[in-house]
Image (cartoon, rainbow, N blue to C red):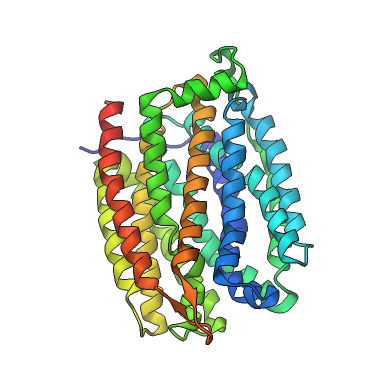
Length: 403
């Protein structure tokens, strides 16, 4: 049965815009590494495994910082906390724009990840703070539009900058956008401090222990880890696979991401609304089966034209967001208000850890021939399917615990 939703207020619309733009800069900074792999690997003369370590360094450091911050995140007013953490993220991104060796880039990605992991949890926390339960699926759908904007505007422009001014330039672009967004946050976002009256005095480690001792939280973390472990397997090497194995021109990569981005902008709000109206679990189950099916088709493709690859990427992203949007909406119902930021911090850590491990697994599975072609791609699709199948059981368990 559909639920009637009240319209968004002007402040809620501004808050959604802030969350979308936060997610956009966060996603662009992370996602731009994958297409830059075709440039960075030969520039540093590194293997796919070493490149996967570069990507995983961000995720694993984000996991570490999210876990540490979970014990103190609910002790601060949300807006002030967000501003300081976002400044740290921009400093890390600026460091990425000036380094020139593998190890200095590795260190810069770690610094960026330390702050980026906390921001990812704050986006979910502020969503839950500001919006009622019957609107969250739709709001999460809007925030995921940032992936579409990243594909339509971010990645094509970043790749254009990279082709003309070097691979450092996309990170400089993120810094400029982030400074503008910081000014918008200071001007438009209201302080969020209602949770402070509910927070009990605990030290950091007692808070973390308390969060990890609750069964419903544990199942939420397990669900997040399985979803990200499967969802990130293909990400690091799709552009390299398309170029080196399937013959796509580097000049066509921006249009490849553009086609996916337009589709993401169109379907993520619809998925969010369907999650609110049909139920999170139904949409999630569809997303798992559809993603697994599309992944198996794509990873077993040996010859394909440009239009087919665009279509496959669009369908893969449709399946992915049909999983992630309803699942994120589902787990917002697990924590109580006074533990919300702490829960989201640990959940973000688990998400980053799952993504980092997933990238490392992909780096071990995929090998490169002397001609530059990637091998063992079908094994990625099979591994993804097995992992996502387990998330079906976990999500059903979470639903029962919420009820």
